[in-house]
Structures are given as C-alpha cells and as structure tokens.
Length: 335
Image (cartoon, rainbow, N blue to C red; front, side, top):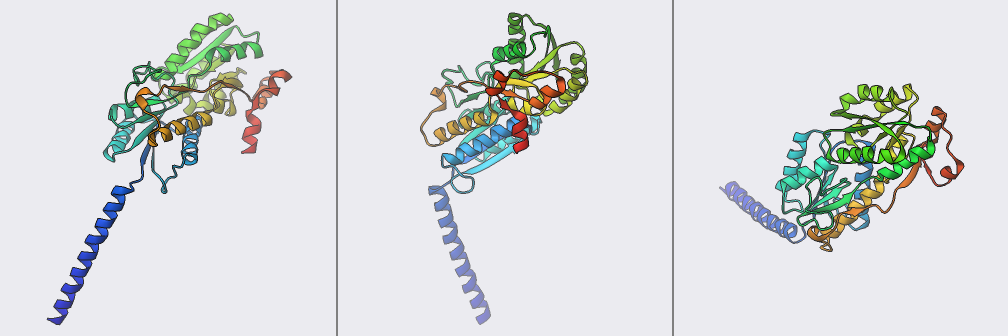
C-alpha cells in the first residue's frame, strides 16, 4: 500500500511539473515566438544558389539569425512543380511570417498559396507580366521584391564590340519560363538595331539542351542566352556543344560566364540576393508594406569576362575592356 501511495505521489508530482513546464513553454513561445521565414528555391544551379546565399547573409546582417532570432525553413523544389505546391503549403500550414520565392515558378507557387502572408520575390524578371503584382510601381497585394531584368541591349552591344564580324546571332531560351520568354523576345527585337540576323531555338527541358545547342551552334556566329533556369541547370552541356564548333556564348548571368561563357554585362546574383534579403528584413521589422513597396531593380550591370575562354576561342579582348571587367576565371581560381 505504501508503495502504491508513493507511486501515486510521484506520478502526481510529475504531472503537476509537466503541466507547469508546458504552460511556461507555451507562454514563452507565445510571447517570444521567433519569426518563421520560408525560402523556396526552384532548383539548384550557381546563379540561384548565389541569390540564396545573398539573402541569408543580408538577413543575418539585419539581425535575423537562424535558430537565434528567426526560424529559417529553406526548401529546394529541384525543378519539380508538384514540390513547389507541396512546399508552399508547408509554409502556409506552419503559419510563416514571410515567404521568399527564388525564380518565377517558385514565386508564383507561393503567391498562389496565400494572399495574406507577405511574399518577397527573389530575382523575378517582370513581376507585373507574370501577374504576381498589379503593377511593378505599386504591387497592391502581399507580394513585392526584386527584379533580375537583364540589360539585354547592353549585352548585344557587347557582342558587337567584341566580335564586329558577327552576322547571325543564336538565341536560346526555355519556352516554359515566363522570365525567359520576356528576355528572348527583347533580344529578338533589339538584334535588328545591331544588324544581327537571328536564329532562335526554344527548349522545354534540360534534355533538349544538347541537341538544340549543337544544332544552333552549327548555324550561327555567336549564341546569347537569358537568365534561364532550365539552361542554367544544363549550361555545361551547352558550352560543350558550342565549344565543339568554336562558337562563343554570351550569357546574361555572371555565373554562366564563370562556367564557360565568354562575357556579359550582367547583374551580380549574390548582390540581387542581398537586396532581396534586405527587403525581407524590412517587412519583418514592420518598416515596409508589400502592397506599396515598388519592385526593386539593380542599379547597373557589371562587365564579366572569361579570359581563359577567350584564349581558347582565339578572341582578343581589348585592354581597355579588361581594365573595367571582372575576370571570372580569376574568381574561380581564388575560390
């Protein structure tokens, strides 16, 4: 009997302690709940990875450190549309305080998942054309962010400056990405201003890159590609096909130059990420409202040149251009 009474006493004490401890924990979480930040990235490739790194670095500098002053939930859909929907629902079900979409399909999935939780766009070419906001100047809802609209005209001018004998310009982009279609159509329009004839090739998946790249390289003097996630995911394959025929690639993104493109006037993807992170922090702090915060743009593009690729292709880079350029080959060797 005494043993039974002792057990009941011990059990009662345990239950009382558990109740009190649970109450305290609930109170602490209720009063000091860390902000929950969900980041959804479409797929892994150097450009998007740099954007994510820039976002987290900027958030930390703004005082949001994972596990200390915020809960960071990073999800990578690996290019799978069903993953985008599932991961977006995950953030909503967990009552995220803010969600960040890296690449247009990821941003669209988040915007479709909630019209209440703030959504920050990480490098979306034209949010208005993609129907993510009412207008780029005044978004009007729960979505705002950063555009990675590339300086297409300046990139085509660079091609002409480096290779004045180019007559036919190859243009390749994904027909399944709104951001790529917008840039591709811009390039086709601007090409006439530089006297280029164009040969356009569209792809629908990474499986098309090898065949399309070989076919295009056989018809043109140079190839231009936009900030395209499908091409970026298989860019080494495109470089291989172009190199086989001695055709230079002028990509829109700095990381693609580092991977084997020749040159670009492009936006630094890491800096785009930092700008996205700063906008995210401002919303978390209550300093800005997505509905009235205009889409932000990088101030200007930088010149990136791959001197090793230029040497391989026998293309001479003027010293005046080298003086103002970032040599991506040197960057790669220093990493």
